[in-house]
Length: 614
Image (tube, rainbow, N blue to C red; front, side, top):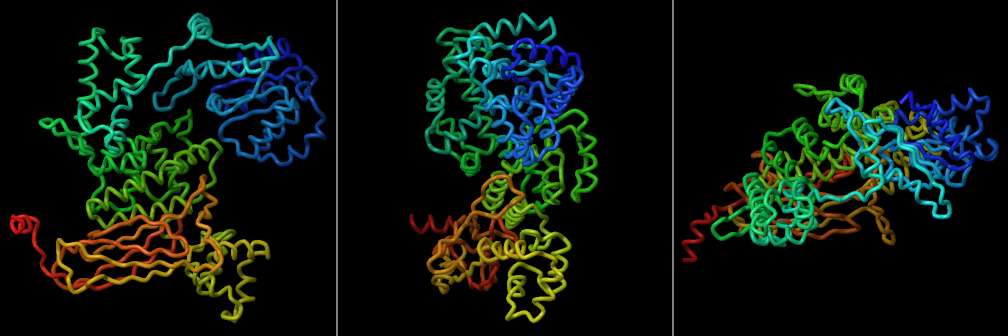
């Protein structure tokens, strides 16, 4: 990369003296290094503003709004850079300045080649390899990425002289020339993801037999490419019989794998395929079949919060998390500061990296830009996986499904389960939380009571101790009054005299939210540390605390008022105390757990019922 810096600078000067140039490099770190190298070359030629096509004063207001200081400095000399770890604001500013022609040079990382949509007179690709931490070696860019990069040079139709420059070792020159001059065949990868495709189609009843699966496969692009490029797909015999045998074997092996993993039920005698509960969960939450298999094998009634954390972070969805060179040093420092440890840390595993970064999120640690972007990717995937854990555990009647629900709250609010709920209020640092605790506010509802001057004689003293200005107090009040859900739950057992084991009983539930009569509740979640827009969801759970059995579960959304029924089946004879849990997936401290008593008579077993019907 050092050797390519001067030829790149010369190419920008020689091929496009005043026209836009785009340079692609392998990594975010290299983006900044290349921008500095180009700036250094300009300074060496005594013309450090040669790439700036406007005055610094004109763009100064925009530069002052840029978060990354190095980027602002680079843009003040006409060189912008763009990588996926930039904030949305910085991306918008650098894109705007480059598009209007204020900046002549844009340096971009490989990862954003599909994201950006700029036009350039000259595109330079500095090297075609990136470091893959899991394999401890440099690997080539996919050809499709190289073509996408050069596509930036072919966009401006009015300029017929757009150029591209590819910097590669001499041994690879002919290889890339072939692909750049000829059309790239697009191959199917369905054979790699066949299991997940089948899970989705079986759960929606589109595939109901082995023959349906074979027929479905014949309508895919994969089937078209089998004959067009048989060696790529391992097809030895291209005759009609050979193709049919190959496809049938692939389908049968895939269905057999899913059946052995307890995801579908395969009846070979009747040739029927039926989705099991795991298939429905995997299809609904878009969870891969390997992850689903891991959940089924690992989650049990004894799995605690630490176990759920380890199981979720071992999901195949996180295998794409990038491992960079020398990143293990910073991961070690973070690992030393997080509370939950692994038996065998593997610093070059994407799953271990996920395990560390998720805990760093709960601890609200400040991370370098690269790791912060990786953390965003993890957070965007983890809630679906936790919902899958809830469904797997609750399907088996395990009450510790509540642990996965609590972890969902931890992910959205970036806090540990042992932290004070007051941390969710804007501007509530550990010092402010401690001050509120000293005045008796242990949760948000107690804090709201204390913030009423008519109820709290120490109101002025408390506000002074909190140390927040008027604007910050107003934002805290807006959160507690408008965002934080205040709900009341009323319920009754239907027909309590006729409850028996192995027979359904019903709870009639009414949930009311405390909002003004003419107002519609805003159910978007206040979650400044969570990267995506989140809507409130709730779980209603009936559980037996003494046996740790979960008897019923239902996922609901709560507006102004919710009326619903919950069916549960008692498992024990006699008087017993059950708990109705109302659990939120987004806020800490709003959960409710009223108890109620029932007396269950001994019901008939299923075999007895069948005999009676006979």
